[in-house]
Amino acid sequence: MVAAVRVHKYGGPEVLTYEDIEIGAPGQGQVKVKQHACGVNFIDTYFRMGMYPSPVGLPFVAGNEGAGEVIAVGPGVTDLKVGDRVGYVTGLGCYAQERLVPADRAVKLPASIGYEQGAAMMLKGMTVEYLVRRTFKVQKGQNVFVHAAAGGVGLILCQWANHLGANVIGTVGSKDKAELAKANGCHHTILYRDEDFVARTKEITKGALCSVIYDGIGKTTFPASLDCLAPLGMFVSFGSASGQIDAFNINLLQAKGSLFATRPTLNTYAAKRADLLDIANHLFEVVLSGAVKIPVNQKYPLKDAAKAHRDLEGRGTTGSSILIP
Image 1 (tube, rainbow, N blue to C red):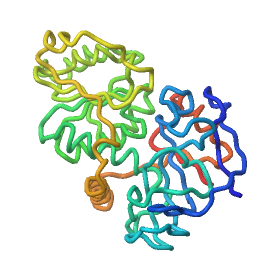
Image 2 (image 1 turned 180 degrees about the vertical axis):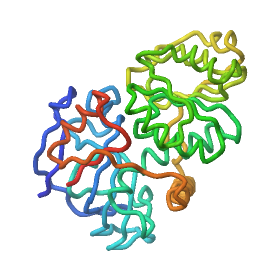
Image 3 (image 1 turned 90 degrees about the vertical axis):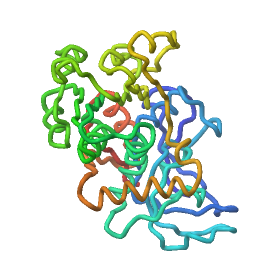
C-alpha cells in the first residue's frame, strides 16, 4: 500500500482525501515510478471540481505531472529500465508515492535536472514550448501579451518569449507579482485590479497593439483581450482559471481585425511520442542553457494537497508548486 490523494466526489479542495491505495505491478507498456515530486497545476482543480470529467470515473487519484525513479518495468517496454530518472505529463494518478505510467509518456530527465525541478516544469514548461514555438511562433521584436504573468506558466512564458526577442507585456495582481514578473523577462507589467489593461496596452505599444495574447484566465479577461490584438493577431486561450469562455459570435473576430483564436492543449501537440520528445528536449535545452529558469516557489507535503489547491485558487502562489510524497 502507498499513500495517495484521491477524489471520491467532485467539489472544493476539501474533497481531496489522503489515504492508502494499492498500485499493483506494471502492465503492458507501463512502468512503475517511485515519485519524488508531484507538480500542482490549475488543470488539477478542473478535474477535482468536475469541470473536466475524470476519464476513469470516481474515485480517482488527482494530479497530472510528476518526476521520479522507475522501480519496475512492464512487458513490451524497451526504452526505459529500472533506475531511470523520468518526468512525465499523463492522465490522472500523480498525487501518490508510487504510480503506473505509460512508458511512451515518460521522458528521461537530464542528469542536471533534479526531481523537484522536473516535476515543476514538465506540464508548464512543455505547455510554454508549444505556445511560443508551435501555436504561434514568437519572433524578435513582436509585442507579446501574457495574462497572469507571475503564475506558473506565466513566469516561464515571459522568460521564453523574452529569450526569443519579444517585447513582453503581462498582467499581474500585485506590486510584488509585478516585480517577480519583471525579474523573469516581462518588460511591462499591468496591475489588472487597478488599471484598464486594454488602455495600458495601447499606451505601452503606442497604438501598435500585440501580435499574440496568451490567456490562461478565461471568462473574466474575454472579450477585452481581443482589443489588445493588432489586426491578424492570435488569441490563444490555454486555460480557464476564472471559468470557461462562453460561446461567442465568430463575427467578433472579423470586427476586431480578422483575428485568429485557438484553444490548444498539450495532449494534442504531444500526442505522438516523437513530438513529446521534441517538445521536452527543447524545454531541457532552454533550461540547461540558463535562458529559462523554473522557480519552485511553493512546496507542500503530499498530505497537504488541499492547502496547495486553496493557495493556487486563491491567487496566493507564484511560479511552480509541488507536492513531496
